[in-house]
Image (cartoon, rainbow, N blue to C red; front, side):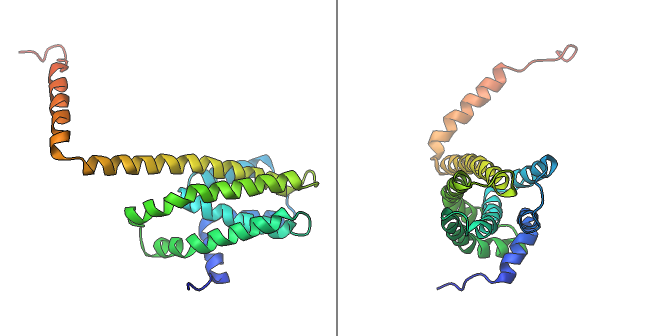
Length: 201
């Protein structure tokens, strides 16, 4: 059985992924989430890979859940889901972050479950927002922002997996199947050469 991630491991994840640090500051210092801050968080999450986004969102969700455990029961389910995701992906992410790029086959196998975990987090954060009676606080703004990013990364994950499958299928195709395609492409290119003025002899 794998040992649980330590607080130091979680702190490393937060410092590398950055967004969880910002969300933690907002929650525990009761900061307003101004439009420019929301934009910055959206941009930071949109520019990272889906597995990194999943961990960043899970770390944020953990803090949001802890902050709201006394207000809404669904927060305990969100905290449990977030913790499970951090435990499942965190150690592998840290190892490859510190030691070099993740091999493509490992990355593909990880992405196979990233989409459903992103969806679970998004659904739970939406449910938490629906149950909250508090208005004009950071929690619903952050939950909505993170849910939007989670659902966007589901689409990105699906796209990447489709590209990986397409590449794999092309590599696995027998040579006799790919040869006619190459011949047709060569014929097409030969029939469609456009000479610039002055180049024809």
